[in-house]
Length: 368
Image (cartoon, rainbow, N blue to C red):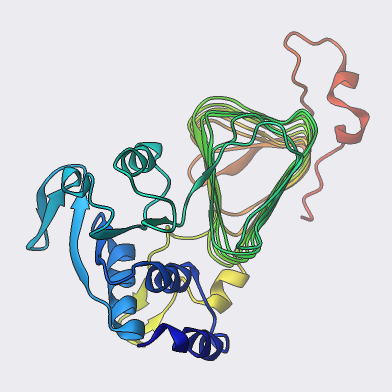
């Protein structure tokens, strides 16, 4: 196909829903200039790029490279050193999440960004500006030093409040997604993922201690209220097409898991041969709603179809997948109410129930 036909080809593709692989394929075609095309790493994503390059433009991949030589699915993967000093011979495509070492290698070997290699998930180190926008329509509002961020799509919006501190975090955002982090929130050693058309909203003055992960997969919502705290090794995830909403002033211990789906896998009824756990219609009904001022104990797991009322406590190692009323203690597997009409506060050895906050001192209402 002649390059003069690229514009017509792209116009015809506008009728279809474009994704980041389309964008890679079009850029490779525009810049490879008769060079051999090399894919860094052999994964599902790289195989998809290979297939689409051949289908759309009749271009073939010459070979794969990786950090060292290996065989995957009977395909020989060459060591990365074979690329050194050969930018005039090879055009390199990197479909992986961002690794600074890969970019450093390519640059040191004489490869120029876009002209000699295409790395969609490039990294932004954001030091002083209050606003950033890239060529894909992705936007970043707010100041943060040494932010490690990968835009993996188009038209995503990130808003960081004042005095937000992100320590050793990796953030991946996809097309048409939204990530907001409120004033004064601190997050450390966290992997943050926001899928296509998803929203991940974190309130103000939150404290996320130690390693953990926050995720809003495609078309989902994960919303966390103000003054939230959580210990290390947490996993808070909204599965595809679902919602997970956590109220204000909640206190989560360590090793907490929240999941609104079955882990992105499908279950079928053998008799009807129908999917019974992960269709769009099923996902729309799956939610986790946690009220305000809820205390979740160590190693608790909260699954979809859970509603927890304000001011309640979930005991250590509990499994919750039901409705828990306000101002009670629930524990066990499955979690059941073991005490009603309680209030709690963060202070140890408190002698004043008023420290719980008058808004959270109530009798349990069983009509949840």
